[in-house]
Length: 117
Image 1: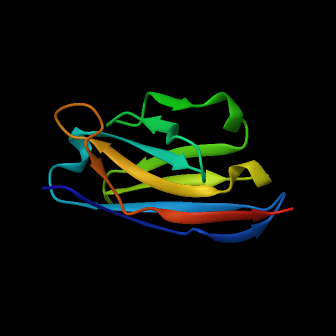
Image 2: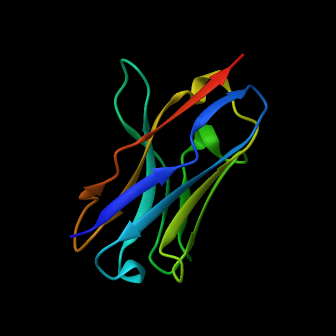
């Protein structure tokens, strides 16, 4: 059983930065891909970034390219999302996800990110 715990959310002014962390327990961390998704009020959940188990293959959705960076440290069993130049439209609950032996099937509880304009 894999458990994911996010941290690092909060309130920030537009143009500011935050770094989200997701600590994983259970399973072999280096054997599964991980990602970050977000859900704003009244909107569907969307993936903003994913990273392969080795960290070689990375994806960022167009709306965050050049501002957000996903990374992982397999030794620390942690995946990060560095968010710079935050905008009000980035306000959402951010979730960490893991693809363990299949599509993304493990999720954290989420962390709130609020960007004030």
